[in-house]
Image (tube, rainbow, N blue to C red; front, side, top):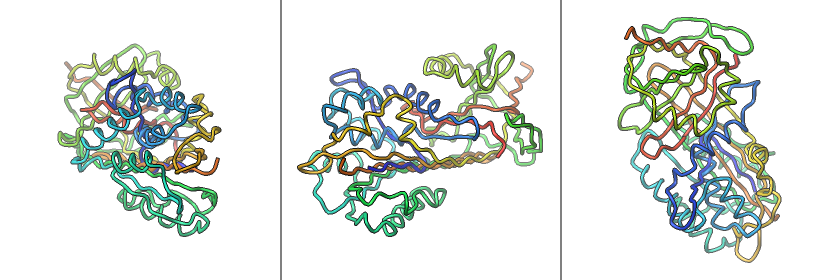
Length: 380
């Protein structure tokens, strides 16, 4: 099975038991683990944990005994599968009216009949019915996938999949796209943007540095400081920017990143008037998400033939991929992600000068869900 992501990651809701908490449960833990496992010191990176969790939640519904416990534990899903499905549906329904954060799904399958459980999951949670294709016609399938990816990400992800990436033995391809386009609550003045040096890890280079004085949530520590820059109120989104300071370093910040640290930041940050200097930047990433999940210790998800996707037989997850795009400028942020999964047989104002590598996190405020998380550290 092939799983790909263009601009978001995938969804998984975690519950301690029974009725359990909602979709946001475990989101920060998974997001941090996934981001750190995906980190590559040689390139900038942005990932969408949300997209990944959404896709794998669908397969949790048809997971057999050999894989369901691993899926539940890895993605913080409820022990009760019906609760997990309800959580996903509730999250998506709650976001349905958000024009600045759009989430879409698409499924392609062969001529065989889906199991009742999987077909119901796709219809109930994702509001889709699969389109029948012939996977041996790889050119046609790739063209259909890429056309959908472009349309679902406002053209930001032009080519999600290549013809040679498709396995002729595939029987199902499940796709998720997340498209974000949000304006800052208070925009940066273009006239203030100038050229300044940025201390990339591979050497200093000039960048376009944006400047504005804003009242934002701010927290300072011995090794880092951080701000939350809100997007427009109707977006329900905000970006946190974490920058090393004092005795801290970028590597130290990455190593210390945890759900506990982020929870502490969100609960202790205070409103301050801050002189912000933030680079205008753009990142495009391709991620072999299957290898990332394997590095996290969950290889069994791809080795066991234990998913009841189709009627009368078992299937295996064969691939998981993600492509992402993100750009930040004076107006705001635009980001996109596509993920796919396939099966086969088997007082003076504070100065916040971001002139060195930093971590950024874009969150949906009402559900405390991590939509994108990444770092900007390499000159490319």
